[in-house]
Length: 213
Image 1: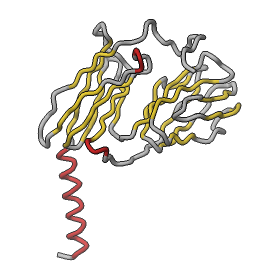
Image 2: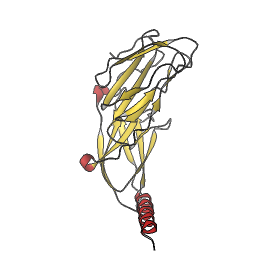
Image 3: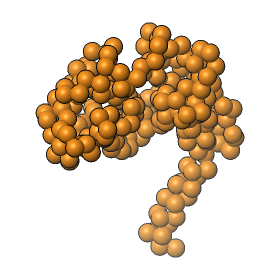
Image 4: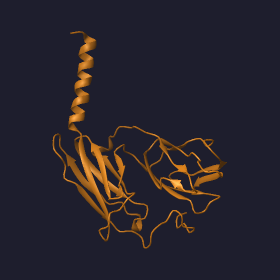
């Protein structure tokens, strides 16, 4: 057996082993009344803080005088593109400490991507259209997902110990509840459940009044 073949075989075996050890964790999110809660960011932080850096880019489009999607999650160090698919120009900005920026009036693909290099929450607005609103959650882990319309989110995680957190843009007090979980190779983990208390009323991205700075 050649050295090259041996090395390739070892790498393949390690890759397959890692895949076998991955576990699909289901998380269910609801509000205080038990109703399914969509657009909740679920992310898992591995014990010791050692997580691979994938930094996959994101995209937040402007269409119909809205930011689409309303909620975006990326790993720290990732870029987000802001294509304008409206017939009018937009002026995208944020005053959030995690990433302050100001993209002057533009249309189409003219705006360069923004680099989100600090963990935290970034609230987006348009300086021309006050009704436009969006949120970016920047996390220090590649293990994240958003809950769907049924309140469910799914994470594929290697075996190990994690702290799983749930963030929603309208959570009361800005709280981010967390649950510990230990995943073992070859086992199907029990689902996790979060019940979040929201602020009074519903944040509508089309509403003229935006309660965030």
